[in-house]
Length: 230
Image 1 (tube, rainbow, N blue to C red):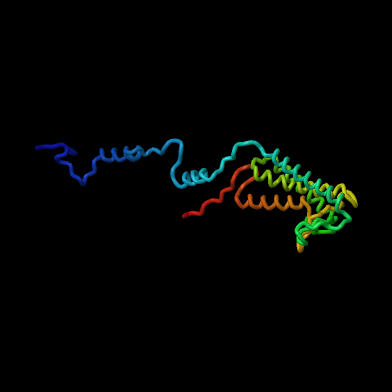
Image 2: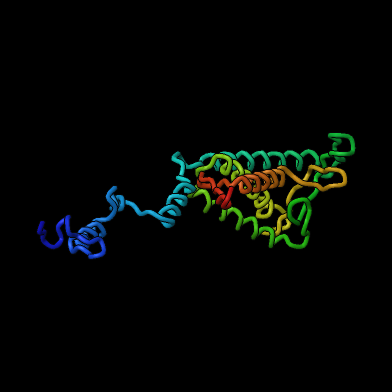
């Protein structure tokens, strides 16, 4: 039988066929048969995986009203309670013997304090007045993005306490910015303080706890990135 070159009967496997090259080129240009085209609208590989992981840890800002009203209510209550207590003890206890509340451990006696909370810094009255004013300004600036209820309570206590002691600095003797704060709660072996000091300390402790928990004043929660392999 006579056959033409390239027919199945006479084809030698060692001799390349031009048609094979055409088929290989077409296969490489079109990609894998199972849909080699990249998925539309996204990327694959490590970069895309990193983007997905970053998006998974993102925290959306919670919706809700601002908590400025709560801050103001707490601040006004703390301020008025402190002011009323000071007016009462000055009228009833100043220049009188102290009143024992819990034996000798806790007593009520009026002391004019020129320093900071708990009688610290007696010679820095003007400095502490400026610090209290700065604290009030900072709290008010934070209030513009305040959406967290616990933060509103904490900052309200700080603001009310700062305003209570600042009022003494401004309006009590011996003069403006040098006025002495009225302290009247005496704890044995500790210090003499007032309700404004207590509000400041409690508010500060709450701020520290909220910060450790990752809570932010705007209501979001700061999440620490997880370590690889865990």
